[in-house]
Length: 359
View 1 (cartoon, rainbow, N blue to C red):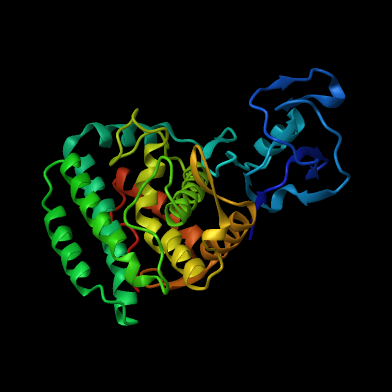
View 2: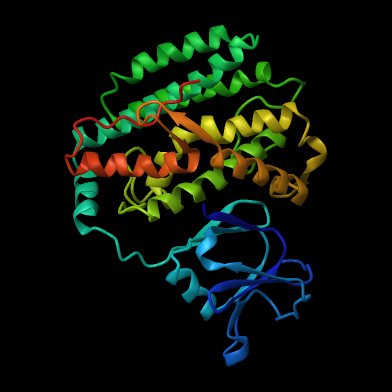
């Protein structure tokens, strides 16, 4: 199995034959500018002046890498980009605050114009778009309910919240527009988040979802976890023939990658939220792990590393898939979700049924 590579230190990235060569350089404050060095031996894109490496280097076979996730300053040469392209390895970049910045996505020779035309046609067709959007949204709510029922079984006092969300789910099935559907999804999530105080094993300052910027520990964890999931979804969309710029719930043009946000709705409860419950209830991450700046709260480096480790463990976890009658990882489930959409667009399957957790 290929591995995701997470870069937390400031790193010089280059290529050595068929390997990625990673060398850390001394930490420094980020400089928000870009320098282009044209010399052949230092043909790199640099934020700030070019420092010497520390000599702390690592060789990683290119064929063993699934994707890179960078949380520090990265500096690279054109040979590194060529190697990413040759081995079809995406690179996802996050800023100082842990927010997703963007990705280098290698050229995909397997892209299908037919699928992308069908994808745009489905987006343009009000009935078909609503059908796909409704399938994703109602499944996301079902996965929320699956999480809540697990903790209710363990003794959490959330039966009333479960009942309310069930009622919203019933109403969402009869939504007549995507906007109406989004309203039901928002209501369900508000109730869901309000129930978290019963799931946490200790008092936590969390009342509601606040995004820009996060207003405390839990919202910082949600934002960081969602950003990791967005990058993972983009990696899997890239490896199929879908276009991440054409979604069904989120408007094309209003978001950078609407299909990424669509697919992530299915998996947020069973991947990101489960990790948050674990790191809080086991006291792996607490209020001492966040910093407050004029741009809001953000996680310290050690907390990010802990969360990333849990994230990697979670998406690599293998479960028994009832329909396929075989064991698959959560990462594979995301890619399978892409192929479900493709098969539906191509008419190979009559109904599109997203992955529903069987907690």
